Image (cartoon, rainbow, N blue to C red; front, side, top):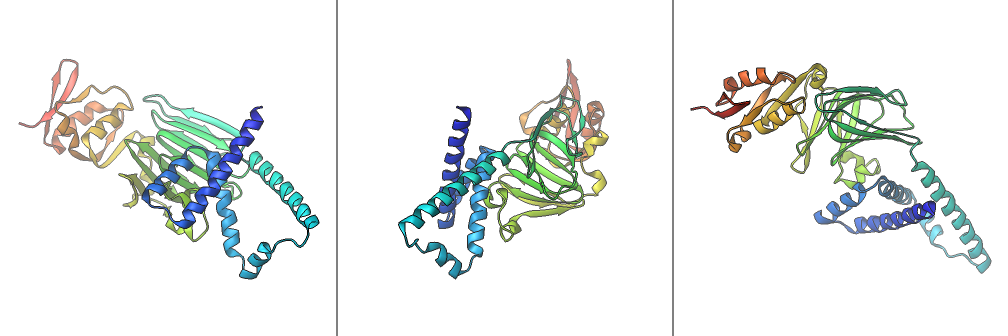
Amino acid sequence: MRREREAANEELDDAEAARWRLRQREGLDEAGRAELAAWLDASGERRRAYAAHARVDALLSEMGGEQRRRLAVPPPSRLRRHGLAACAALLLACTLGWHWRAGQPQWTQTLASARGQQLARVMADGSRLSLDADTVVEVAYFSDRREAKLLRGQAMFAVARDAGRPFRVAAGPVRVTVLGTRFAARNLYGAVEVAVEHGRVAVADHGDAEAAAGARDDERRKLLLLTDGQRAVWRDGALRPEAAVPPETVAAWRAGRLAFSDRPLAEVLAEFERYGPTGLKLARPDLGALRLSGSFASHDAAAFARILPRVLPVEVRRNGGETLIDAKK
């Protein structure tokens, strides 16, 4: 019974994917693209069905006019029609069976670190995954690909190369595709950052549905290609390249450091809280908009509080069991 439901769902996803491809060929406005992105983001089955239709479209686009005309010629006899129908049904059954098998993960694991805790794990293929504090990652390996979802926090990926099974990371609206490299991904405070320590990755906004679903080569030009020290950040609905950094500073949290570049003070305080209670509070909410840059020890909020008045127009004072950050008088 469960398999029947799964098969029915797959057929429904396949039909919906075909309709989306048709709508996209006719042209989608911004609202339509957002709706498509939401539909794709709902499940891996939908993304796979969409990618399959995209590949068929790509094959058809590469055919010459004569080949297309031959495909369009009707069969000359009823017997031939029945024979072709039986072949088509068999081909469809084989295709659906292949897609069903390909859609079943061969290995899965969910990793989660607690507040103030960091984890390091080796995956089934030899890839290494390091989690910062308060981070959740879901990993699934399939016959033709490896997928990870960074649901919250930040992580460092050292990916074992396997050209036959590309490694993809989903972090909020951002998708990262890589064959073998070391890169960090961060999904916090409504923003996503990807930074490469060594190697090369392709980064796409999931709103670019063609790129997210694995489109043709000409469509992949919409992706951002990052190499050693390069970064990209998705914020406020847009994916943009950022200034490069020394590769050895990627994922500075592994060395117990928090690095900020022009970030709001409220976000900085929230980042310190991921490593343990700090007792630091803003006396007024508007002070949280002050911008801060610098590198600080992640587990030494007291030292950060001492430094803060030197870099921002604030003062720090004790108030019972809390440390209040107030405007400088």
